[in-house]
Image (cartoon, rainbow, N blue to C red; front, side):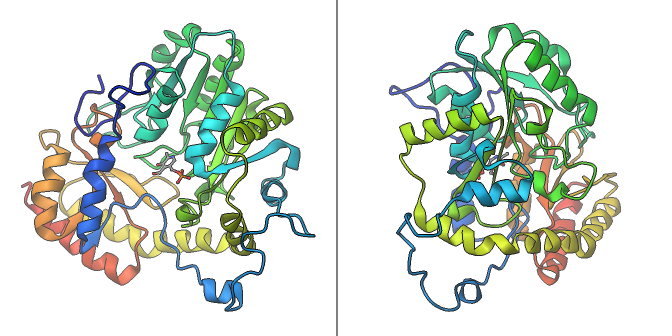
Length: 386
Ligand SMILES: Cc1ncc(COP(=O)(O)O)c(C=O)c1O
């Protein structure tokens, strides 16, 4: 099960006592803080937002005033961009808090307080229901074998065997660490099994927007009133520190989510919303630069991998993918012992599940010149495995 020291801590409801850590953060944050020459570990895009330009060089007058003549209503902007009604939207601080609001809005109150969470996944997504008094039960959407880096399929038996016992299901359609969008028939199957069993389906879509304009763009809220999409400006737009997130669902779900927000948060952070409002007209710029970085950078990664006899198919969109190392290589040892010698930081896939021992997540969203140097260094890391 999920018992590796880097992997998510699933299990029963928690509070007080020994609260479970997010183990990967304890591993990752000190490494980032120490500084690395070649950071291939980003999951979010680093976009050079020019606040001087966006603000016209001066502090917005209403930075901390939420009640202006033109209302500060993020639901309006989200609704317009996503083609839904404002009454279907509710805000939260990042995907992280919006997931809390989403779960509390769509869980079935008649069912056991247990939540099915897709694994492998990002630890806070798999662990947070425990803090809400829920037990977390895993279902599996993982590799067929030690070379398979996506797209991964849902193990339908693993969800079918627990669906009677849960009040909600959580999925991350564009998966971390593979970067692949869920196949369409899995997505429909997931929606169907949830509606057949009368449980809510919460969809973490923090990486989905790199698929906008492609057939892979299929937000879950379109699959029925039991489904709720959760998104933010964090990853695809490079604005994580703003903590600007939202949910989209049925009007009933959004009303519930707004009430949950009022219960737990009162109001959202006005300065964040003001800054998000300034960036909002330009949100397509980071998406375009992500596309451009794929064109300039991705082939370098593919070349380095094939020079090291690693066959790999990148996900069709986004800035990261999951790379299979030879099956005997431990990804944590590789990053700690080999990559660190060459100034490289990559993400061990063990952070997402103890069942991914030989994979690393690698990002190609960096600035092109730096990325060429990073690929040289990464090549040296891989050569050490020979
Ligand atoms: C799948 C997934 N969901 C959510 C988050 C965090 O999103 P936010 O910063 O909007 O809370 C991350 C960050 O790594 C993530 O990988």
